[in-house]
Amino acid sequence: MFKKILIANRGEIALRVIVACRELGIKTVAVYSEADENSLHVKYADEDVCIGPPRSTDSYLNVPAIISAAEITGADAIHPGYGFLSESAYLAEVCEACHIRFIGPDPNVIKLMGDKARARRAMKKAGVPMLPGSDGPVDSEEKALKCAKDVGYPVIIKAVAGGGGRGMRVVRNPADLPNLLRTAQREAEAAFGVGDVYIEKYLENPRHIEFQILGDHHGNLVHLGERECSIQRRHQKLLEESPASPLTDKIRRKMGSLVVDAAKAVQYTNAGTFEFLMDKDGKFYFMEANTRLQVEHPVTEMVTGIDIVKEQIRIAAGERLGFKQSEVTFTGHAIECRINAEDPETFAPSPGVIHAFSVPGGPGVRIDTAAHSECTISPYYDSMIAKIIVHGRDRQEAIARMRRTLEMTVIEGIKTTVPLQLKIISDPDFAAGKLSTAFMERFAPAPKDTRLADTA
Ligand code: MV4
Image (tube, rainbow, N blue to C red; front, top):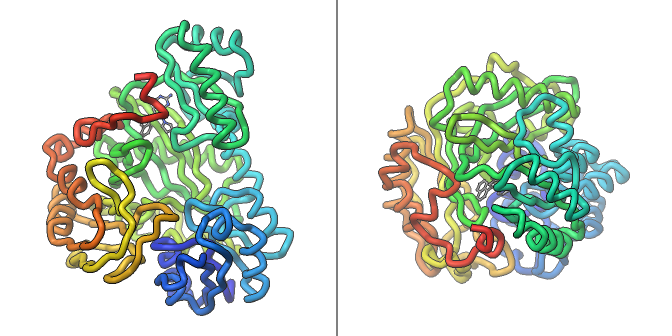
């Protein structure tokens, strides 16, 4: 087992990894930017190294600085958390070259899944259901028009290097295609440095359902069920839950074993998420795979009792998964609300100093946060300041728990999304499980979504 792990991240997820390391008896190294000197992840780590100025590109994205910090402190592994370098095949390769273990999948698997057109091909070959679309990138107007005609309108143009909605365009008729193709390519080039795009049939108001997997280096691979993440705004998830209310045990087993087989086919190891769109008839279509620990992993931990971060560390150290698929059980219902330092109306960031911070616990409540009273929420990073996760015997109990927890939460000094989360959790359609990716349009009508607005 590792003796010392460096955590190449900040905030609540850095703390989450420290928690797992402590329980495993592993020493920790925090890295931090000049803006994070007084952060909790620095306080709770056994050692800490400043890796640069506040801007992410100068610190949390600075591979040489992070590798140097690992070498100076003698860390034998790096956990990248989520965001930042978590899906960087480059970091994974440099780690390998420096004999530092990267806690995540093999760089080749990161590269495969990072190229959405290649991932689509590989998953199709492995028998995963897929929306019709182009076989690989489309590099000309003629090919794009031909493909869209074959698939049938509406279609969606997506960046090969994409994810998160950037470089996406919905095309409803052929006359609009040439312009939208060019704008999508330009946007992809600007955002990712790769202008390649591919085409897929566009599904109206789908649900977003994703499967969590864990695979070791001995050929054992299991799924931990699904999460529903349909409550989003501008491709930012707001609330996630497990199980997804429309899924029966039978569908979970079928989709789960499909995902396990597909992941085995690409020799997937460590933790991963396979994202699907689900249509009104309950049909699933592969969207993309994420090769990192995800923000919403706690809802899966709550219903399975499996500590995903500890499993990631054990797997990276070469240990075998300690359980079989038949030993993975799903109990009750879990919901996560992301609390962001944002104006709940406009979603504009609201950095500043928190003057009161109190979130009640109680049965079935988990708070993952690095925030506290008198801490400063920096404008340099993501605005998520806490995750409230609840577990109940059923969805109804989980909703009641989340509602009372949100009602009793006190955060002063900055604006937060607590009032918005209260509206969602109190909504009759939410209670009835009537979810789709269009759910938030009723709450906070997005005046201008630069990625999808001109396509609506
Ligand atoms: C889609 C889609 C409909 N049809 N693909 C948005 C983020 C990116 N990862 C993929 N996205 C979508 N892809 C097809 N073929 C609708 C979306 C989408 C969406 C997906 C999940 C959650 C929220 C969303 C909001 C708008 C669009």
